[in-house]
Image (cartoon, rainbow, N blue to C red; front, side, top):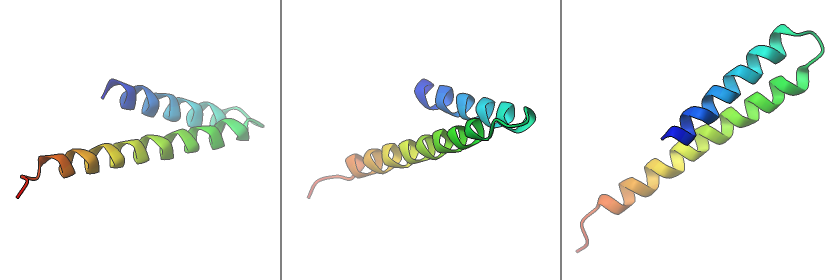
Length: 57
């Protein structure tokens, strides 16, 4: 969970810095990619946990 929060924090910081400073569009794109990676990580983790909780028949 800490990894996810750090990843989200870095993504937001990069997007803000890239948006405020003129000419740093690569920081915005890197931040968006990190944000997508964090969301995918959260989805994969939640799906794998939900799959493990099902009782075996």
